[in-house]
Length: 70
Image (cartoon, rainbow, N blue to C red):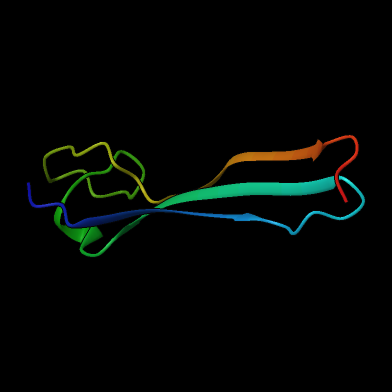
């Protein structure tokens, strides 16, 4: 099988405000040639399996408070 996929992650943390800040990260996979392999989710059954399906997920999210921090 020939599977050309691109995986990436993107995160962001807000500036601190009255001791609080918020952060999060998303992670995703996109297929550049999804008709050349069977990802087990793309419906292409005649090709070998490469279990790397396209996905976009929230990897982490949080709120933080630090006392005495402005």
